[in-house]
Length: 347
Image 1 (cartoon, helix red, strand yellow):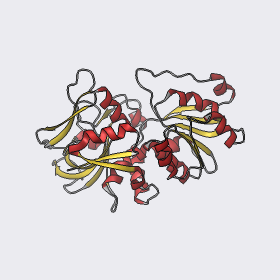
Image 2 (cartoon, rainbow, N blue to C red):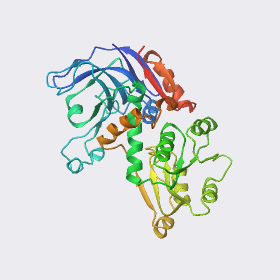
Image 3 (cartoon, rainbow, N blue to C red):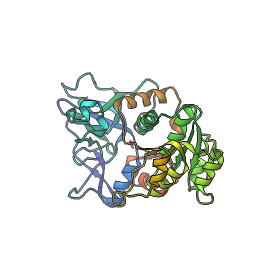
Image 4 (cartoon, rainbow, N blue to C red):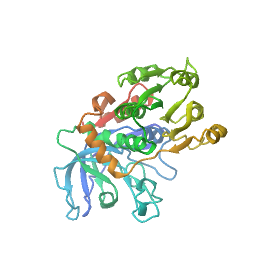
């Protein structure tokens, strides 16, 4: 079968590899759609991890079961599945408290070496993923693109529940990539007023489709001053940093109101993880600064229902598709900033 193998920085090779063997307690899935994520792009730019010669990426996955092991539980050949990458251990301090995304032994399909992901014709879903991972049957009528988009949407739904986005609040979304636009859609669905800040003209135009209340061009406007103006000098109730840019985290503290919530949704580069925050604004203003990483499995099921109800419309987010044979082009398009979500499909 064909698989896209990352062999070096920005170097993907479409290789003939042996067809996967179905584990007795697992499944083999035929890939029908797999999204290119920002974390995929970072790994693609850097190449495989140290000591790893080849890696099959892809963790925003939807497909059809073509083989099922005898101990694979209730799953059967023909099932249409949406798959998220997380595999928690089930035994650590966090897992015992159902904080599965914080598992100290977390493994990730398409990210952890040895767990090949969705940029291939077929993918093994091992038994440990079925037992301690996130796999759901897709509701009737949900498309393959919607099934794959559920992974990204899950983290956004979890973020808004955890930070308590409420009716009538003002939410600032820093960054209008695919994640940022999903934040706009969900914040609006929760009844919030939404302000988007984005330097890229193409992405500002893309964000306009989701009808934010204001769009700020950060290359021409002082984003902190503009948020203060739009909120009558109060500041935002919630600021979501939906990009991997340290400056936005610094600005977020400055534009949030007293007792406002600042969410660090986009991780910074590992080589430069430090950021300057005005601690006095946090201290005297009783601001809350919180991280957002992954999600409890229930949010993946909720995401599929949100997509089924058309609260979020996948066709507004999936702007480009490419077949597996042109997966390198899919990554190049995603890296250009000209797309929202790029989906890889079978040839």
